[in-house]
Length: 144
Image (cartoon, rainbow, N blue to C red; front, side, top):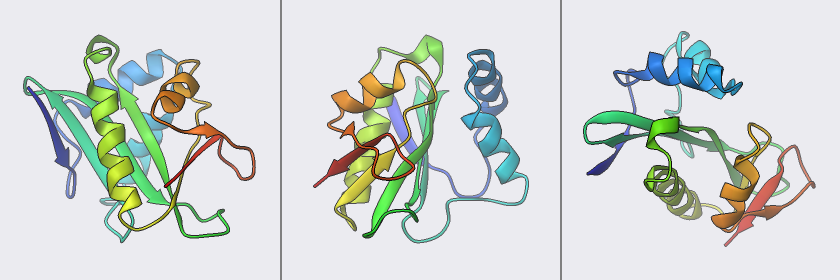
């Protein structure tokens, strides 16, 4: 069973393994999340969210959203997104993305994402409805 949990105070159990697996794949975003969290909990302001996905009680992935400061209109950026390799192709990434997209569209009409982290990122985000967009420091955008 897949469960999405909003993270407030501390990173979930198993996060260190997630960081290691991401690093092994050459993906730095989980290490960046760990580093920023050392200064205290993050993603607590309006327009911010950090979600953890658990599959059968095990941490399967993480996804976050923050305001997009570079946009010319109110927007949100989906970021710090990663699903463990052994948890892929089970709907985890789609569930995380869908929850963040729905929450983002509750307050803005534009969502952005930077899909440079891996070769699989751009096709994944495009399958979620994002289209290539180079009008800002992002690679893809989705409009409501």
